[in-house]
Image (cartoon, rainbow, N blue to C red):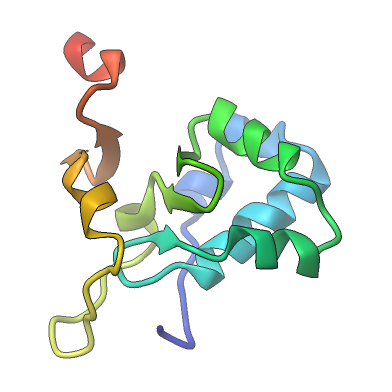
Length: 121
């Protein structure tokens, strides 16, 4: 996993993000830091424990469409490609291959293939 990550103002400057609680703003930033090169985080319980937060706080990020959850342990940063582009010579593919197969990328944003929102576009 990389030691450096970028966070884009195009996401953090949105009303959607600014209306989050302070705790969830911090949680989102830590999830971005912990993400692999495809934007997946497989240690959400560790991140929550480190920040003294509860699993329910992930619900707000999911509700605001900032993350996509795969069960209780894995999330993906929905706007990962707005934040980061990992050079090919440094890229390491995600370990969450099955979860990645369930996603498509539309306008640099992850969308679940079964997501009804994709049918509207």
